[in-house]
Image 1 (cartoon, rainbow, N blue to C red):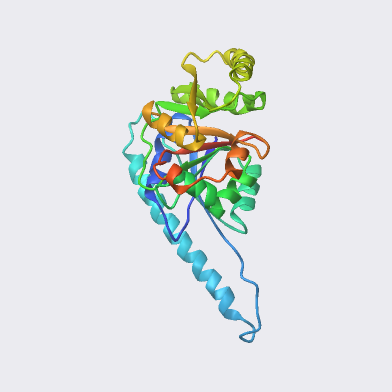
Image 2 (image 1 turned 45 degrees about the horizontal axis):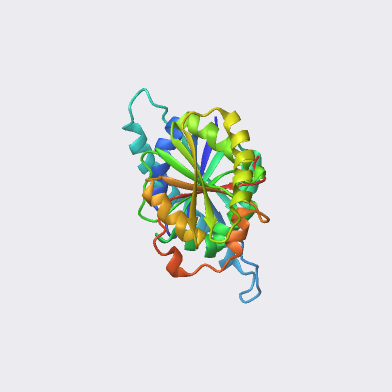
Length: 287
């Protein structure tokens, strides 16, 4: 069975992220994996034999296991209260040594992972996405979709996802994934393109026509398109997602494409300070 890989920071565990995975897991259906990593400290000769380093790692690992068990027990209590007709996900824990991004990538290659789920340390999710080293590491290495949930937000139901598009044909794999997910979770999927001031309208219309012709082959009835204007792409996406009551904002990650260009831009805190919607980042190299 597929699994949701939930990334847990043992120093800042957030129950809203784990709780958000329960309704997802019941509908996909999938089981849950609570996942954490640690980095080995190089041994020095400051103390003879340096036994304190090994002891420190052992204590950290034990402490992490205890924290993951607490989250696991809390999730099991919630899952036990689910309707008997729903899939009740099983829970396992996993601790890995190494860089978070590389560890996640390796785990994905060895397991059937539907999606990676992680939290941000603030409600300012876009800022976390642009600046957080752990998030960047996972995004750069991961080959499965990554759901990033802001602090204080719990996803109970997914009724609508807005997908930010550049009307690029390379996005077909991302949209195919979203449509398959939509068929299981039964949500509305809206594809939106932010037309920046001065952008050639005829070029956009031509790309949209080619794009929608392919997307319509998916034959998903709850799918729509919009082109909206805006000076700042992130700010416009933020306001638009709120105005259309989206539960998740989705986009494809490609270093030479739409999301990659946005990452490279200088984005002020003023433009992103109100962003607090969960983000679904879909890698271009999707497994």
